Amino acid sequence: MTLTGMHALVTGGGRGLGRASALALARAGASVSVLARSADEVAETVWLIEESGQTAQGLTADVRESSQLEAAVAQARAR
Image (tube, rainbow, N blue to C red; front, side, top):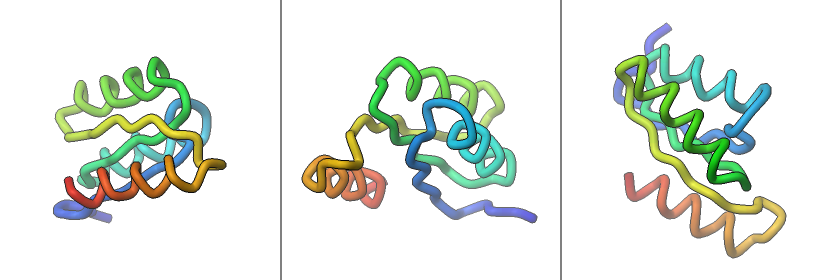
C-alpha cells in the first residue's frame, strides 16, 4: 500500500499505538502531522519519521479542549 501524496493527522502520536501508527503511515509514504500533549514526545516521533526520510509536522494540543483541537487541525490542513 502506498500513501504517497497523502497527509495524515495522528492524535496521541507521541507514544504507544499512536506513535506506531504515525511511523507506519510515514513508511507507507504519507506526510504525517503528529499531535499529542507532550512536546518532547511529539518531537521524538517527528525525529523518528524524519530519520526514515519522510516528512512530519509536530503539533501539541489537548484534544479535550475543542479550541486547541480546532487550531491543531487547521495547522495540519494548512500543511
